[in-house]
Image (cartoon, rainbow, N blue to C red; front, side, top):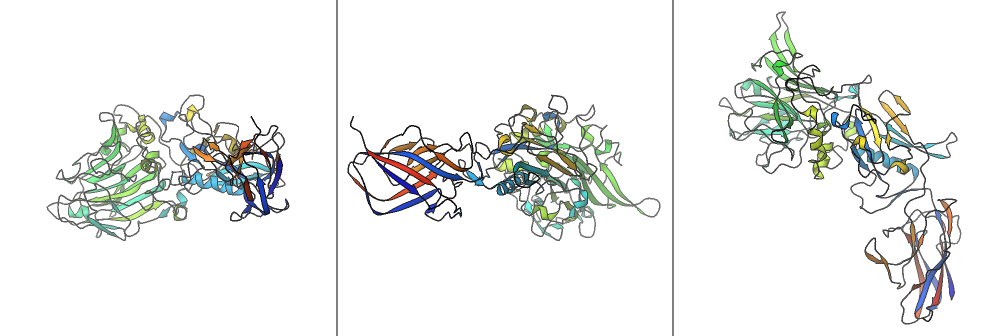
Length: 622
């Protein structure tokens, strides 16, 4: 029997990391000055090992998921409001980003981990006014030495932060059917139809930025010297819609669980109205129609529903509007979940001045749902302008002009992109992942998204709070919980340091800022055990987790009863001898040692000096 001592460096004080070095603490080689002979039919066992585990956070798919909820706080005793009664839904936040390998292990310092949490929470925060405003810091005691957990801070942009952002030139895409090109040009806010065929629509969506939901506005000139569609007497449409990446089977830009109604405003069945969540249009008779997309029980899908604005007691009209040349502008205004539509009337008010803005329809808590818009809900939090210019016998070329589009501050939206998962809205992300028909459809089947013509609304639409932000709460769901719909797969309670599965009580609330703090310092002991490998020998080991052969020699627990980080020493009570299966004597000139997790990924939490002591012997006779 012989003993071999392997180490990556001479002493323990050197902790500089160099992942390219062959002498790193987690992977190193010892070269021999003379040949070391190992007899035939030999066996090897681990006698002991000493490692230094730093204080980094180690996480994998086993401890990296929790849910965020932005909306009306639910009652945990089962009273109102329940999840089925609100316009929000929990969103899963995985600390493993979509770019990471499914079975990978991450190792980050405390500060880096806090920044990583903030980044992953930001990417899975889909309300446009909350985007890029989540902050996570490491909590320490009064001496700033002892780790106490994490401080998680939510904030949002209020109406005072809004920015008027006319969509940039060229930032428009076709938004009707794949077979139709845009059919228009766009520059400096002006969308101009440039097709002559009456059968070809010109419909575009502007996905560059979403609308602010804190007194955000979209104003479109329909009858001025530039935006002249109304004055030209042609059908047009103006609306706000979620972005849709994947057309349905018929090629229409509509959610997979939606239906598109043809010929709502046009003279011909070849031209159909674009999908929007909230819209208005001039029909073939010159009448203003108002419409939206709601759940329709008869088709079990979301589809267009007309809004009887002329029956809304909060509006200024008691009959359908005949779109004469007096009407020159359309305005959509949103405050929280409340959408309002206005129209500008240049007719004389009898005092020598124009009548000005008049309310077409707005939120009316005592009115029926068919006289007002649905609430702005999580499936359509990120709304974009949609413009359509059609044709008539009086002319095929006309235009609409966006004169105002209010977004949250541009600095917070530099990474906004509805074409990419986790860069746009909730619906857009789930659609790209192929699961929008599950959670999004469930949300849009709720009672508040159905027509009621003989009773009050099924819920109160949320408005703005005293700080000018949306009057929503923030909630963390860290373990599966039925209150918030099961939240399957949540397992983040321990790694974030909270006692409860639902965290909805703030330690501080100042203005729009809401703060959570860990209840206890999360343990830095990873649930990921380590293994030591002897890489340049022929032992026959199978790692059934990966399904491959392995060079693993022994299992090293990541913790004992005294400590989980710092210098750790491991000596097995019973040696496990592994056959090297060498039919002849081996002449060894180096030992190749590494430490890994069960997925064979390097355990780079090791630092300083690592020591591995090996026993070699001839295999005993049977």
